[in-house]
Structure formats: structure tokens, C-alpha cells
Image: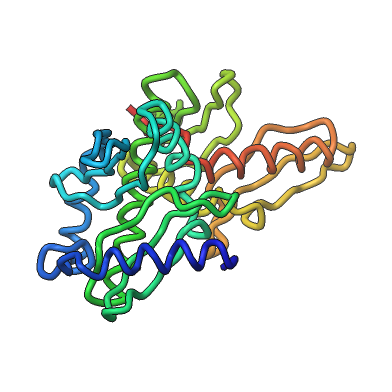
Length: 262
């Protein structure tokens, strides 16, 4: 952490020291099933003007729990840019700083690439609970991005039944190109699990295996951690084109800007 970020975190910690610690109602106290309930509905960003005249935003979960609050902005438009920054930065675990307050409780900051704090969590009574809360915030932001992609006609997953009566899915980019096609599944439920596997594995370039053909063309597989092939690309005219497609696809999946199948 840079010196400037350390000082910002120190002063945030001092301010949070007077905040009630979340006990039985915090995200970290939820069981895995209860956490799923928290992220079932899309999170809501709420902007408001504080008593100090500055503008803020909250990220509120589907159960109405506040899970992230911004720092103060000088205008509503600036606060809305802060919301956009949360959506850009909030899906990567690398952008979260997990910190301990002077009282012993734990919290986290969501930090932009330039080191600025975009949002701060509530206080949690343990490191485990704060870590679990980071996971919940990431899921809420990802779900919001999925919904936004659907509303704007962006990239999307689609499931369909093939002529062999098996179920498949593909990933279609915003320009209409199908960039990944699945293997065959016995049911739609199984195919949807395959979509989840793309979201889990597809943001990492190391999960792709580029295969060259005898005539110099190439294609790639997206491979799960257990070695199973999740999806296959179209055939490209060269390995360099296939490599570029891997970079593009992994960045798209990592961004979470892909709508769920309808």
C-alpha cells in the first residue's frame, strides 16, 4: 500500500472506530445459503446528499443491507462517476484492501487503479466475516453488470437445444460474433452450470489452451481446473489471431459485462 493510501486508510479507520460493529446481521455471519439470498436480487446503488453538503452513494443488497459506502463527492455527477468506477473496479479481488481498525474490527476499502478509495465497507467483528463480505460485494456488482449488459444489448450467454437433442450454450459478443461454444450437456440445468464455469474460469488467460492445426490455422479451448473442456472457439486463420481472441475473451469475462441466459 502506498503512503497516501495508508494515511487515507488510517483516517477512515479512525472514523469507523465509532461505528457500531455488525454482529448477527453482518454478511459474514450468513451461511452460504443465506449469502445466496443476499445476492439473489440485483444490488442497488443509491445516491444522496449528506449533511455536510457532499454527495455519496451506497451499494445496497437485495435484503436492504448496506454493503458499501462511498467517500464524499462535490457533485451528484461526480458521485455517479464513482458508481461507474465501482462497476469497473469492483469485480476484481485485487482492488480490495482488507484492513483492521484500531478497535480490532475489520473492514475493507475498494480502491481504483490510481490508489483512490472508491468505497468503504461496514465494520465486521472478524477478518473471516470481512472477507466473506468482499465476496458478497463482488457478486452484487457482477450481477448488476449482467443485468446492465442485458438491458443495453451487450454480450450475452444463450442456451439452445441441438439437433442431437443435447443442450448447449454459447457466448455471443456485443457485435454479434459467437466467441465460445460449449460441449454438449444432458440438460439445460447442466448447461447453466457450464455458463457458471465460464464465469469462474474464463477471466484467467491461463485457462485457455490454443491448438494449432496442420494447415496453420488455430482455435482454443477454455479448460476448467479439473481438465474438462468448457467451451471451444471458432477456427482462426493463425495462432496469433487465436491468441488475440483469447486476450479479448478473457478480458470480457473478467469484466462481468455479459448477460445471463434468458
